[in-house]
Amino acid sequence: MNEIQHLKIGFSSFAAGIEAGPEAERQIEELQRSYLTFAKVQRGEEASWELIRSNINWLSIGSMMRYRAGPVYEIESGARLYHGKRINAERYLDYYDALPSVCISQLPSYGLQAWMMFDSLQEEMERKSAQGIEFASAVTYEVEGCEQVKAEVPLTSAKQIFYFLNSYCRGKEIRLLLGREGLEQATPAPLVDALPRYTETLSLF
Image (cartoon, rainbow, N blue to C red):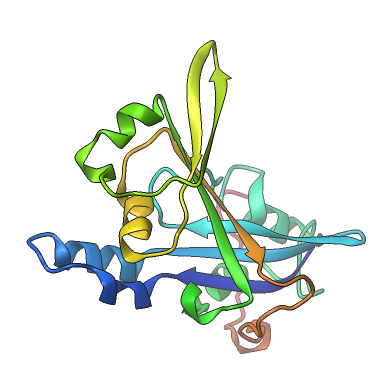
């Protein structure tokens, strides 16, 4: 597999939409610090965007540094390439740390589709934190014999985004979508040659 494109997406420009109040400063900080880093991964003839890392609570994403699994292990072992090149784990992690964040509002060719999982959507809608929140659709499913609901949350405003970022739930999912088929926004240039070169390997290998 080969990572051919990368995007670190944030929500900083939406901070201006936070209403004044005692919680405004915390909400603005949450919008400014939250991010999602995606890689476009080529497997054979197919390429798709995959969420690699994020700092959003309860988001369904595996660790980059699982034991003998995940992107860092795959890079170190050579199973995963970066822009067609084999690099070590330290350079790979440095690249992700250095990747600049771009607000989703500045990427008109892309969109984010987000879901949250609850025991009961009706109970969630009655909470104070969910007042005025729009849910686009909901699907009921079973987990170990118990009913749960997966609800889509449109990320269309500061209030909607802050709710998705901050509210407790059973789990969250998000994926990157192209607004117009075949049209992709320019992304930051590869940093392979600009990164420091290491000879050490991580202890988990």
